Length: 235
Image (tube, rainbow, N blue to C red):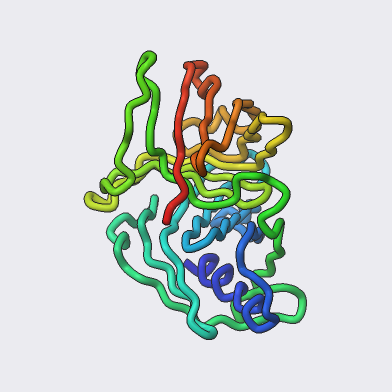
């Protein structure tokens, strides 16, 4: 978990310089075979997701996330999902945060990282839960209060979706990468996908519209199936 410590502790520099921690962050590290690993942290209002994946081929390694809070220089993360250690779900990790001269790192760990964006320019920055889905021609509501959740967390340029169950602590899958929102078209550029690494490098385009604060999303899934989903911001 040293990489996680580094990212979270690095965010302290923002606090000490009165900047916002919201947005996307990137770090580089190595796995046991000395292969480069990308680490992406997306921080939205109240929620955070962190993922590790191979820098060259996008092999999925791990993701964790949940609700975060900041009190002074203490960052806390209450885990809603952990793909590698599901028994940690429900636990709160707490860190004292310190800045570094060249960016943000965990003191003594040597991991440098930089901010990718500050929640711009994309139109969908935030943490969203799937709240409805079309079955045939019928739009079927889905409770966002149930333990089984599908969340999408987005900064201004990065996205990640995660399917998980807070009651059973089960992790079902995730994927993420870069996204754009141009002229009513939301386009995902996949950089990691836990269920099928062959999807890495694919681009998927969807029509999107914000209606009364909800995100309406339609097009073809990564399998080529038509989808129509409604996503609601987490409160």
